Amino acid sequence: MSRWQRIVTAPARAARAVGRGLLAAGAAIVAPFDLRDAMLFGGTALLGYGLYQVYPPLAYTVPGAIFVAVATFGAR
Image (cartoon, rainbow, N blue to C red; front, side, top):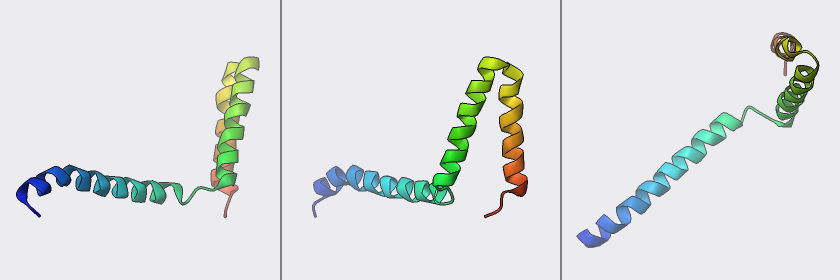
């Protein structure tokens, strides 16, 4: 491989390496979560939104209490 070819292909190799690193980091972050977690977060967000329309302080109190209860008593 000539010097010019190494200069031209270096950014592509670097981009692939960064992409592989980001995929590995994303997989490590997403691995502990499953569908139940997504449903918990989504449902709690919708509950908070609905409560905000009725009484705004409830929109922070009730979902916070749910997250505390799940963190305290919800074991896998």
